[in-house]
Length: 70
Image 1 (cartoon, rainbow, N blue to C red):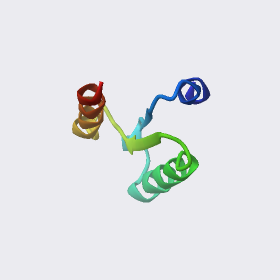
Image 2: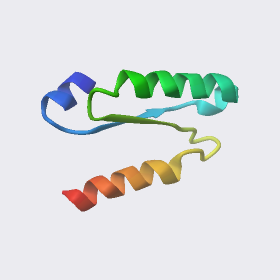
Image 3: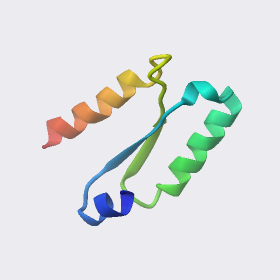
């Protein structure tokens, strides 16, 4: 999916869901690895948990920026 999006010169924002299932150290490690993997492309990432309502505001801010620039 990322290849398809990036081939069309679009941005991607990866939601690392189920963030509540990992301890803080493991979730930050996964986030760092994901950000590093997307560093050479237009890919950002964040931790997200619908259960704990973690990351909802950050995801909304990303989408708002995309809509404002469209």
